[in-house]
Length: 152
Ligand SMILES: CC(C)(COP(=O)(O)OP(=O)(O)OC[C@H]1O[C@@H](n2cnc3c(N)ncnc32)[C@H](O)[C@@H]1OP(=O)(O)O)[C@@H](O)C(=O)NCCC(=O)NCCS
Image (cartoon, rainbow, N blue to C red; front, side, top):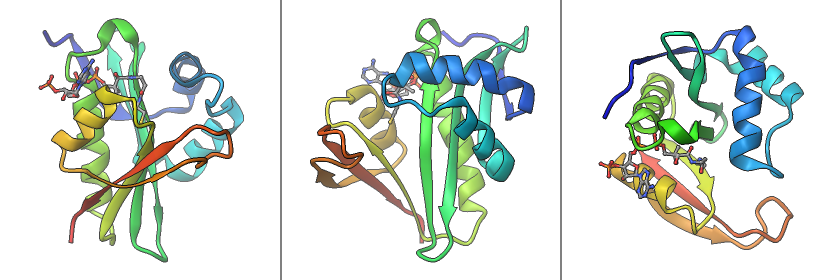
C-alpha cells in the first residue's frame, strides 16, 4: 500500500528530523547532525526527502560525486519503520539516481552490510551489482560490500 507522501529536495528545517531517523536506522554508526548540515550545505541538489501531508520526514536519501573518478555515491538511505515496504525507499533512491545520472559520471557506488537483505534487494532491483567485500571498511570490524551501477 502506498501512503500519501511526496518526494522533494531537502530543506534546512528538515535536518533535525532526518538526524532522528538517521540515528534510529544506523546508531552507533550514524552521521552526526553537524555532518548532515554540511552535506546540506554542499550537496542539497543530491539530497532528497519523502514527506507526508504534514511535512513529516518519512525517508531520505543523499549522495555525492567524486569528479576525479567520475563516480557518483549513494551515501545514505533510510525510511521510517512504519512506512517501510511501501516503495518509499525505491522511489527516493530512483530520484537520487536520476539526479546523479544528469551529471558527468560513469558509475554509481554505495556500501552496505552483507546482511542487509532489504537494502541489497532494493539496490539489485535498481541494477546495482556487488563488486567487492571489505572486512573493515569503516575501521569498526564490520564487513561491508561495495555495490556498483554502471551508467556509461
Ligand atoms: C532499506 C530500506 C531503505 C528499504 O526501504 P523501503 O521503503 O522499505 O523499500 P521499498 O518498499 O521501496 O522496497 C523496494 C524493494 O526493496 C526490497 N526490500 C525492501 N524491504 C525488504 C524486506 N524487508 N525484505 C526483503 N526485501 C526488501 C525489495 O526488493 C523491494 O521490492 P518489492 O517490494 O517489489 O519486493 C528500509 O528497509 C530501511 O530504511 N532500512 C533501514 C536503513 C537501511 O538499512 N538503509 C540502507 C543502508 S545501505
